[in-house]
Image (tube, rainbow, N blue to C red; front, side):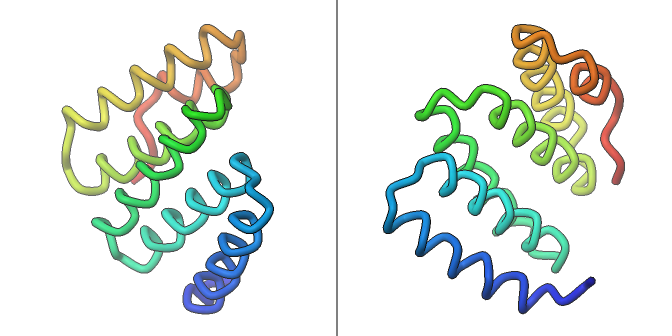
Length: 116
């Protein structure tokens, strides 16, 4: 609904809860949500940091599908920043994941430039 500050507060509460339960998957989802919130508020540097945290969390817990989806978020952020090389790199990594997992819908999405 556009209430970025309330979303941030709720996501930080979610991060505390998932951290307390040691749910790596939940932590990764919350880190990625915080990245999306930061991007929506124009905080590109914070968004990138949160997305990279999520990527590391998902990678360490072998959540390959979520790794691919996070690469899509990083690609969209890189595109918005005008970084063509990073955009292409993240899309290629997402394609690799979705191809290996045989997820055509996301493979198609990763094969196209992300929306700005």
